[in-house]
Length: 215
Figure 1 (cartoon, one colour):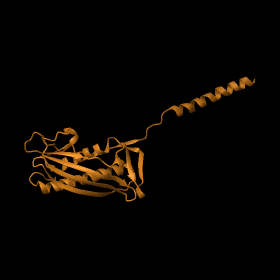
Figure 2: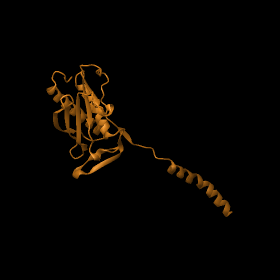
Figure 3: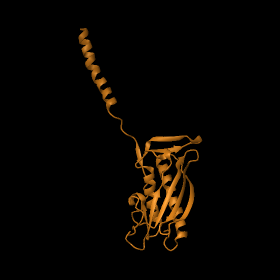
Figure 4: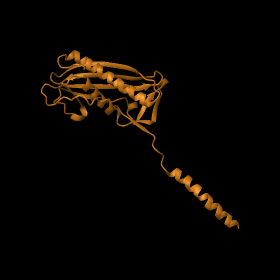
């Protein structure tokens, strides 16, 4: 009789244990969200690289800060404490995202005779480019205490024909952001890049008034 009760108890409890075991063995659903910059205006016609009147600018974004060189979106709070989000992640290296976004935004801002090409596409072959636009980013992060995105960089324009540095400019921008979610943070970071592109385009107007015009 005792063995019969134990057998009944075993068959009653086994499905419960089996169900619990399965729930543990089943991998957790990945709740991570992946972000990048977009903002590409597909309605604008891109210039023809074979057009002899075109001015070709090779764009290079230098190394980004090491704290941001990771798959996770990084924010900073008081006393320089960094927070890496396991939920908000970059869909591509941040350096590549910045290069692509700045290439698109500059292409939208300058006239049709200007062609902006990211350096990755030329594979280091810059002999056919007229100018090299180098952007070195020293700080690019959302500051929780200030509720602003900090973008600090230095950009320079080098003339391949005359072999001289045309311009070196330091740029710092604080873009307001409520930081209520990572969507708003990414949007503010993209806006900061757009305003950087505006600064570059405005300076180019002063240097090449006959070849550049902001639309």
